[in-house]
Image 1: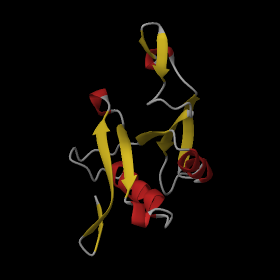
Image 2 (image 1 turned 90 degrees about the vertical axis):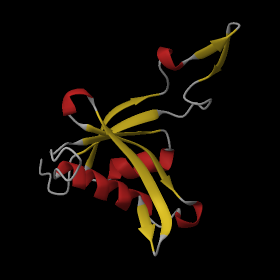
Image 3 (image 1 turned 180 degrees about the vertical axis):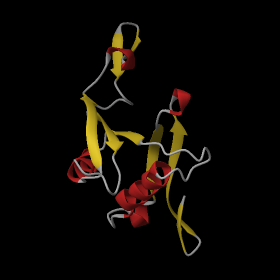
Image 4 (image 1 turned 180 degrees about the horizontal axis):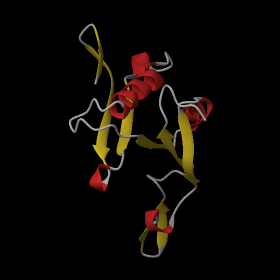
Length: 126
């Protein structure tokens, strides 16, 4: 959680993939009154850097993957040299929900592309 003067500003969930090969961050939320101030990206980068340095419950350095369907967040992640895009798809067959032969929606009922990114870190040189 990100807190300023005791006020909740943002939160993010982080778990690991099987065999502790990498971390997975999801559900980045920035409170409405803090949106647009650049807090989300800074918070996401700070948490992912901590995991990369091994500052996590496993004391193990792990890269972090993150998926989003938000167009502006995806664009910001593509611009940031600390991130690399690893996937992108408009929909998958497993995400289709049908009832009585009618498609109910994809990824929560919207048709935005889901894009995946991997955090490379502060000092990544390639």
